[in-house]
Image (cartoon, rainbow, N blue to C red; front, side):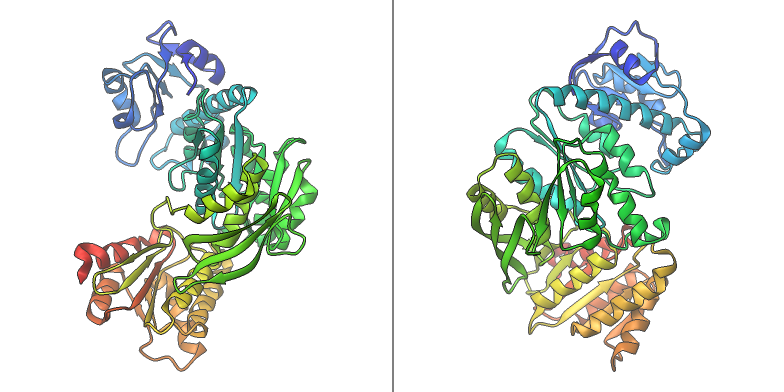
Length: 486
């Protein structure tokens, strides 16, 4: 973060000083985990499920923090943030486990104001903010963009999917005067959320990947999801750039909602940056011809799954806009690696069993992409799909799970293991789609899934593990790889 005194921070967030005259200067990182504090940092006191960060305020100063951002008075130099109205506090508290009184929500709101102040100052000095949203692929695309932009100048991007009211400003505050690119991932639980995040760190380039069924239970329809995802392009300035996936009609329609210049991407013939001659190798890694106004070049991705072609095109469009030559874009895309855990994380055991750990999260679109990748990788090998619940689908829950089970049959997946009663419709769908008997099984929990797999896996089998994070299906993948199980 740029250096600021506690008095300046209090002025920015509308807070008051406590146990200080405000002269202490924050020159280190902004952290909500006191164990991560650096000398001169700012400790953000937030409630948690088990402990309240306010109790660590004095300890934060002992380990070198310059001050604390807090909701109540603490035994440390602090900026005490103003409370929020009850409704606003409740809305923001959803992002914080343990925030029963809205104090954490007030601190989050202040953190957002501080991030907005810092980003605005840095943008005046040449910082470019890139925002990425979509129903699926946000994290992978964010990671690709970061890898393409890093050779052009210092780049900040969040770890994993740190994309909500806490992760968004926390990431923005990692930027300082040397940062040239700030790549942010924007998620939403309801209307207005992306607009709020975009206000924290105003983007100049906005990327919308797709509109799927993730969180449809909260938005009511895909059109409702599209309305919210489009808040990103509405936040762009007139001299900004909206990178839109023309292969998704709901995304393409967002062109009418922005003042920014449109760069279409995809395999659509009208796409400005498009992929031609897409091919998959035996490991479901895509190769294609990258075509753009700046020229053409061949790309061979090291990432698994054809769905990464669209992600790569969006990343390429951003890099080309920021001045990277197309040859460099193609070379860096071809060298790009997976950076975030549990997203098509492919590991082969000593006995030849390949585990596709895509267990971080799931929705119908990402589940279909993962199953197609499994089918492409397996070929003549025996394939297993170990699948759990897809959350927040509302009235579509049963039909969406049923369809995934049927798709597993149509893709000739050898065995389907459905974990948990919440996902039972997958098992029923598979059982009704074909003449499946033991090919599909419903097990109660991850322990039962692991026991089944350990008893029946054969050398060279391919196993996909995928569900929404609430199912914690990474426990299955971790167990299969523990000690290599060979």
